[in-house]
Image (cartoon, rainbow, N blue to C red; front, side, top):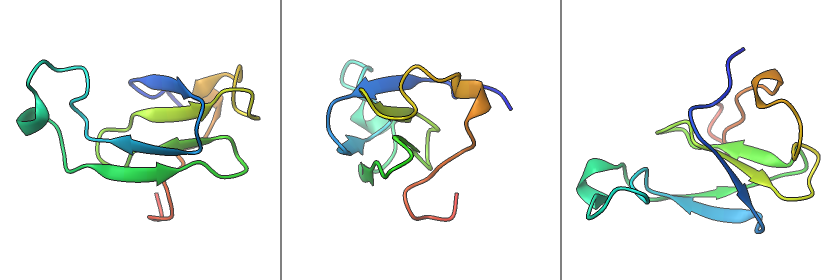
Length: 77
């Protein structure tokens, strides 16, 4: 497996992703805003842009990201 293109360490289990947060004025360059919920695995992947959200202090924090499987938020990813 390869590591996700971008990994964000977050402090909350519920996070929003629009794929354009870091692009100046870039909402039109991203994807529809989705809300992702981190479960007991400690991470979740966005189904649109593959951005990975890792809960700080969770089981996936500090793990090799390339060793973790794709893990979507209930979307069968």
